[in-house]
Amino acid sequence: MKTNLKQLFSDSAAFSLALMGNKLVAFLLVPVYTTYLSVQQYGYWDITTSVLLIVTYLSMMGTDVAMAFYYHDAATLNERRRYLSTAIVLGIVLSICYFLIVGIGGRWWLSFLYEGQATYPQILLYAMGVNLTTVVIQHLLAYARYSRRVWVFNSMTMMYVIGSSLASIYFLVVDKRGVEGIFLGQWLWQLVIVVVLLILFRSELTWRLQWRYCKDLLFYGLPLLPTLMSFWVLNSLSRPLLTVMGTVGEAGILGTAVRFASVVALVTGAFQLAWRPFSMSLKDEEHAPRLYSSVARLYLLITTCGILFLSFVIRPIMQALTGDPAFVEGYPIVWMLSLGTVLNTFHAIIGIGLFIRKRTRVLTPIFLCASLLYLGGNLFLIPFWGFWAVGVMTVVTYFLIMVWVYARAQKIYPIDFRIASMLSFLMIYVGLLSFVTWIQVEGWRDAWLYYGFVVLLYISSIFVTRLFRLHSLAQMRKVVQTWMR
Image 1 (cartoon, rainbow, N blue to C red):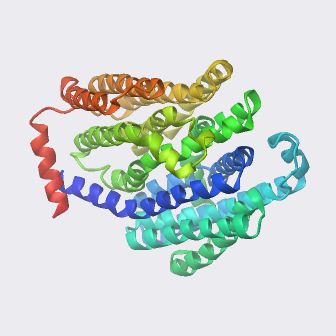
Image 2 (image 1 turned 120 degrees about the vertical axis):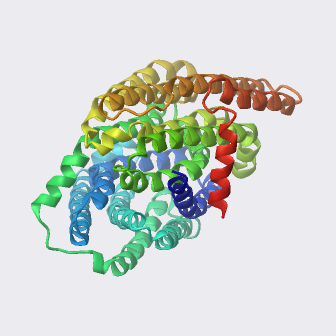
Image 3 (image 1 turned 180 degrees about the horizontal axis):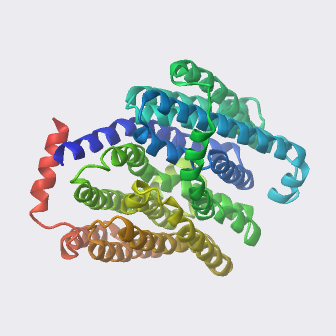
């Protein structure tokens, strides 16, 4: 089991190199965007990004998740290649359809999404172009992950993100195209990356497609589509809601908080990239359930520790990077959004049995109900709490998802995750971070003294709730020492 954990940590560390570059670029873009865009324009950019996310889900149709399974389930290398080619062709066809839909109904979409203003008439067409290239890039980079071409994945991912960002800055700052220029720059650079990736993976692609491969991918991936749509509701719908029920400025403030909360994705994103192929490669091992349980608790410990220390310094970091007090107002909910990101990835660990047994359709009613709860809660609370409602509903909704996914997965593939310890630990943790937020909002003096007290309580809660036992520290140290060799 130690060897398996070493492999998971090594893969996560390798993939984190690309993610660290991505997040560094994202942080460097914040002061640029807040300088050259007003709060309202920032809101337009954020809304378009939300639309792009849902269209990407609809273009992928869950085939990216299906590929993680069939890469290890395929009997031959030729079958793997046909699954990859089928997924790419299907994504391209769907992306072209959405491009045409936006092109035909462009005026109506602009009026609906941007409060009747047509300041950027081509923005959605450029966004659909970004979607087309993104689908191809994501499939090919995912294949690089599954085949453990770590350096290919890292180098191409960083070229993809950094190049897109620089091109966006050029069209925003130099060419003066505003929000529209951000998406135009991304599209043009991603076309270059698509060409490079197709050349690199030309031997892996085959155009002799068969319906069987398409059927397998859709059978596994389509039940996940409502789940992915629910993710969009949980992650993106809050900004349009704030725009309608509040102001575009509030949506921009929330969008800024979301960007800073995404720093936790340095851990969750790297882990998630490594987890899918890792967990599927071990699904037939006898010790797999025990390993899955250990990984779940380690993941919870590492990510919550990171969010805790981020909450201590988030306000001065936001002030330094944005420079505009209007963008800093959302700092109190950054930890809530970050915890939502952590629990979002966490459901893939405690629900691993659903993916192993090909029971992904079980997730559909869970996420649909969670989305309705999230939507209803925001509709009711936003008029009273504004963007605070989004943070609160994010935590509540993902807690529900975590418990529900665990309950359903246990009936199909039982694993002792120590769920009672996890839930107790998380309840205490939310209480501690709520206390930190209270200190910050009220402006208590010598806040660092209280932060020290919170850290001591956090460490104590790990053992009081029996998330880990004292003798586990020695085992964890051995695992880390083995990984560092």
